[in-house]
Length: 227
Image 1 (cartoon, rainbow, N blue to C red):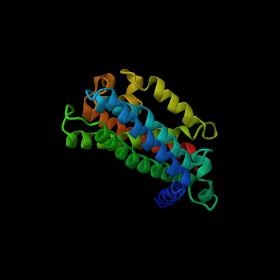
Image 2: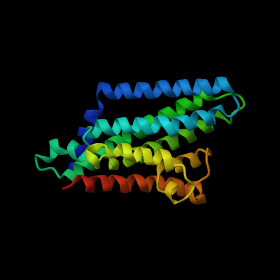
Image 3: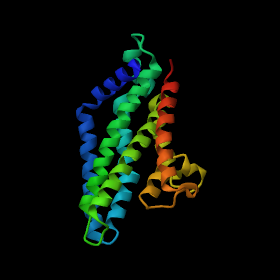
Image 4: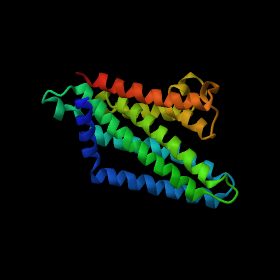
């Protein structure tokens, strides 16, 4: 546990950087522009269309940037080295690094989701408060799952594996079959009522799948990073 906490502290220290601020500003800018464009195109369904852009494009790319920052561009194993060289278990440090990225991404994703709903909302849309709370909660789940997924990917190919896993989620993550059930995209889409649920799973099962995915991938990240 001490190694995990030290890793989380190191990850948060790395995230307190101007590159993190730049990534966040870009994410917010794209989210704001997307919401305004969708509302200007048509107020009917603008919230759903804007949320689709936020969850399918902005949150995954922001997760990639934050994971890369917390664990370094060379991946979680290399990112854990500054503490591992002093005898702190590398797997524990890697879990801490990935966890810090996941928590940071979850918070940012919740804010992005809420901002999307507020800016794209119109009198024809469902009640603002309900959409706001629901979208923010799903944003937390999406941020956790994407950060864990990409952290695991960063343990391959000297960190470049995170790009491969991002591409896998982008191209097949929306499947309604088994592949979709194993990736974040289909679950978040179904919870937002933007797409059919993978394997026709009910909402509680998709929530459980995202949480289980997060936990298992964080542990797998630590295991891949080494002892």
